[in-house]
Length: 170
Image (cartoon, rainbow, N blue to C red; front, side, top):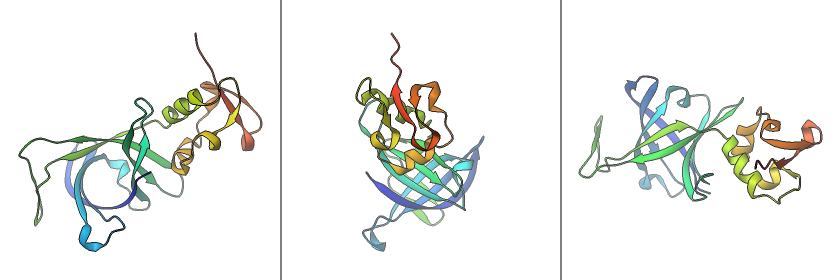
């Protein structure tokens, strides 16, 4: 799982509820290896009081690793799917910087129930399982807090130790 902590510097232009951000990503390889990217994110994803991470999870639709923006604060966790858009011969001018990679990442809200559905479908058929047995990411588990999974799966047990089984529709 790729996990990169991000620090934001707003570019200051808005697109009807979305904000552009110039993000400086510092992986754990040192200050001289800084990567600078351009993101288009919903305004509520750009919070000063929380932590923003770029993480890689298996996409529920394709089962192929994909990039997600995870925004954590003390109350909740939100997940955004990242899609990369790039064109040939493109660059960004940001303040005193020129970014030769003219690509941008667009963040759209992603419902964590899709992770739960896919995990429950691939779990042992007919058997009840705890969510933390089939979803290994603490960020996804935190994002699922507050969701009522009884609408998408059979459940047994109390709130603290609830087990789920996928409902198969035919």
